[in-house]
Length: 266
Image 1 (cartoon, rainbow, N blue to C red):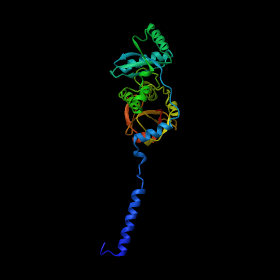
Image 2: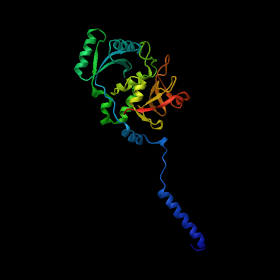
Image 3: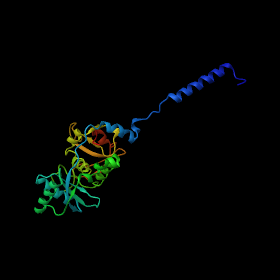
Image 4: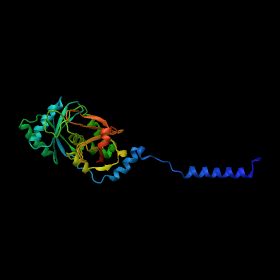
């Protein structure tokens, strides 16, 4: 300390105290746009007020190499008043799922009736415990979200079909989102408007895989389009007539302009 003036010692002491106070009392700032997924999930789970109903027993039939053939069977079943949708199985073939039955016996009776009418041939009854949603307690919520995304990815390249009125091509936007959720065991409503009204609001910077993103692409501000969020600002959707299911970005000028919000059901 020899050689230093009293004034210098006082200044050095004050600087030391100030720096020490700053390090101990200053809280690290975390931008909400960089929140860790685990932090978002913790908050989000508390915000989901009511879970959607789960799928019961379902009839699975068909094994088509072309989606058009699966779409035709789907339309035949719908004409008979049955809920039906088709999907891309892990084998690469397209299959059809029919109905949502509370009891296995009801599903079996309906399947046998369709077989007698020669509408379907072989079939398989999917049980509730086979769905991804039933495995959340053991495998976690990430498993369910990833399964929803995998289901959506399996439709990439399938042609668009508006409103399910023609068996010639593929999926309309809300038919796609409904199907990928049902394949995971969650009974999502049919239309984009119903899906928007059913889910819990999610901020754009808090979207997680498997959430749905909604847009007003028609005239006015009503919901008219929906897609499945797959992470990193991207979503899978059926963009319109004559186009195939694909991946797009929320930062795309068009979708950014027409974005209405995100919804979660998990």
